[in-house]
Length: 366
Image 1 (tube, rainbow, N blue to C red):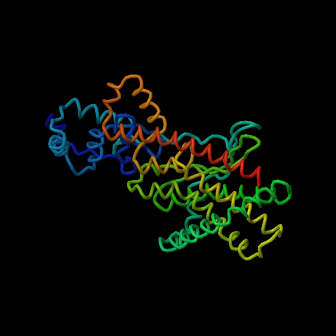
Image 2 (image 1 turned 60 degrees about the vertical axis):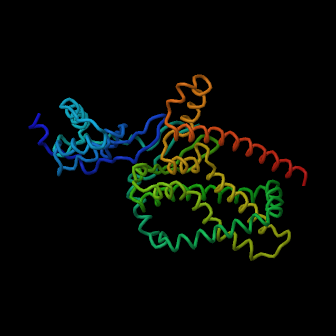
C-alpha cells in the first residue's frame, strides 16, 4: 500500500474535464478523450481525485486533501479501482497510446429524402482560417459596438412593425422577391452555423464537421462544435451558443441601412427589404427562446450549469406527481430549477401559441 501511495500518476494533458453539471438529482463531471472522442461521467468525488493527477502530487498527498474535503480516507481498493478505470481508457500519461480515432465515414450519409453531406475534409482547420481572417472583428470593443448597432436596428424595426407586416403580406403575393428573400435567409442560416464555429475557435473550442443536412424540402448548413461544453468559463460557453443569433442580426444591418435610406412608400425594393428585416429578425430572436432545440435553450443550460434540462425537468415533475417522497430526495436547488423550468416553459409555449394566433389574426384582418 505504501508503494502505491508513493506513485505520482498524471492524467494525459489533453484529457478534457467539464465543470460541474446538474443531471437530475446528481452533480456530474464529463471526462472526454479528444483523440478517440469517447466520454463518460464521474461524480464530484472522483473529479476531485482525477483533477489532481498532475504528476507532481503523490497519491498519499491527494488522499490527505481528499480526507480534509470529504471526511474519509481512501482505501487501497478505491485507488486501484480509479487507476484501473483511467488506465483501461488510456487516459494516463505514460500508458499505452490512445486508440486512433474512428474513420469519419463517407462524406454522404443518408438518402434522397434525408441525410447529410460533409463539405470539408478538416472542419477545424477551415474554421481556424476563418477565425484568423475575422479576428480583428472579435475584439470586445468592436463586438460591443456591433451589438449596440443590432439593438438600435431592432428598436427601429419594432417601431415600424406595421410597415414590416404589410410588406410581408405583399411579399407572399410576389414570387420573385419572395425567392430572393428566401435565398438571403438561407445564407443567413449558413452564416449562423459558421458563427458558432468561429466563436468556438476564438474561446478554445474545436469544430468537428461542417456540412449540409437535408430533410426535404428543407436543406440547411450545419457546423458541429466539439469540446465547448468543457470550457471552464461560463461566458465562453454562452458566447458560442449566442454567436449564431448575433450573426443573423449582423447580416441584417446593411439591409436595414438600405431600407432606411429609401423613401417611404410603395417602392418594391423597400417592401422586399422590410419583409426581409421582419423575417430575419424573427429568425434570430426565435433562436434565443429557451426551448429545445433552440440556441436559447443551450444558453440557459450553460448558464445554469445543467445538462438535459428539459427531460430532467419533465422527469422531476412526473416523479413529484407520482411520489413526492422520492422527489424530495432531489437537492433543494435542483427542485427549484426543474420545477421553475417545467412550469416556465409551459407558460412560454402558451404565450407563443397566443402570440402566433394573434399575429395570424392581425395579418388576416388588416
